Image 1 (spheres, rainbow, N blue to C red):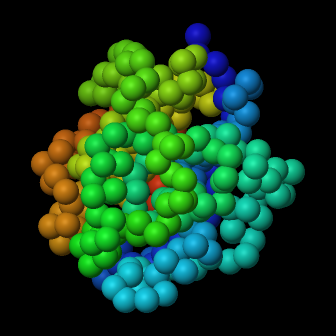
Image 2 (cartoon, rainbow, N blue to C red):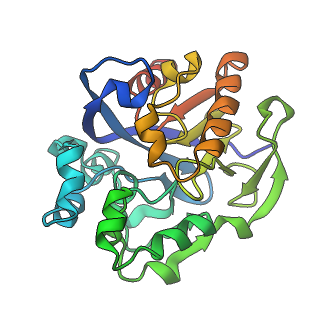
Length: 283
């Protein structure tokens, strides 16, 4: 049996954009898309993060052009109470207590807080790290793809480990069409699952036992749980800037199957208020 962990799902800021960007047929109305991150308590490995959401570093990194376009196109709201550092403090934690940060992918709204964790080891999929680092110094190209290389800690490279090097294990049969994962800690508690399409190597995280229930953090493989259940892909405009549209649609359809046939599974996109509220209600 997998080791039991505890998951706290935290909202760390939000951005605003049109609903119709998140789903075909959606309204031409602005809506909030929270930046959610997972704070995981492991019985022997301590405190672990899945993504960091926004942080003050985001505003510093987007102060000048071309990076400022990111902030203007996707306006960000980050109240003081939603700062990840403030939320950790309410749990009696400091940033030094976080030993591991799992990076779903390198878009700015997922890694803005990495600099706040000086003692953490990082996990990411190798291809995503390579593609992100290749954009260093290419400011316009990086910005247009949602990347802000300035958010990385100066000592990032010695601290990042490729999740690809972890042992590959079979996932439960009921998770099909997702069949294999990467055992990040070696005890079956945190299984990295490649969710390609949205980025070159996006990484989901399956927890077989998160305080008594299975949980699947899916990053930006879908932006809305209700839209995922309905099978409504993001707009074609979004598809134009997606690195691999075919694989994104394939990943999305696989997650839709799970959403329909496995209601006991907590599927958690990184930007969905409904999924966040459902999880808090059921916790």
